[in-house]
Image (cartoon, rainbow, N blue to C red; front, side, top):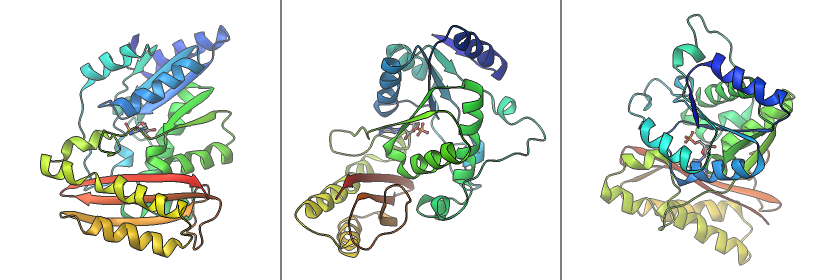
Length: 282
Ligand code: AMP
């Protein structure tokens, strides 16, 4: 595996691979890798000649009071894990190389899709995500890009950006990888104290019990939201940011459950903001 630190070195490798007719799979990450990230890499390994993993804690997607500085980092361990799944290229760019002095161009999906859910409490977040992902698409020139369903709103927004900006890239969405008790794996889980960690399973439990009720005939979004809200609110110290039932493609709220449905939650446990979701066809 090659460890690459500059845009120009990455471009050289990418152009060589394309010259040989190789296919490229890209996995954008912020590092502190876990099984969720590795599941994306394994899938990319099966489907492409060249697997590029980027590790970049992207400053433009963090608000002024968010955890940019505190975000966990462990590049040594990340490299070991990337090697274990046979990634070809580990791309660790510097922020100065990605956003040089005077940088001024942003990519933004307009409208409700980026303003709802996490966009409400994190108003600049998705602008940062679509900007860095566009830049990585131009640098890595992937045939396929791998993203986790864990970040369902991110997936919907990137799908929209790919469509609207005519990126010739296949978006591959991979299922959520969970801990044994159901908690969705996340680099931010390491912020949880052991007491908070044991409470955090309420997110997936509430989502899965709602899904079971829907299987048994529940069709009212309001009833589902109330049920999940009550279940999570019964756990202290859990503070609900949102519980939302939407059309999985447009992210528009729905009243009656029909078609492809996404149920998403964001909950602050102690000082850690956790997100989770389930997606299914009714
Ligand atoms: P991050 O490093 O948190 O930006 O995540 C990088 C990619 O890994 C994103 O596409 C995430 O959706 C995906 N990812 C993170 N956690 C999980 C998980 N538990 N299961 C599946 N994919 C995940």
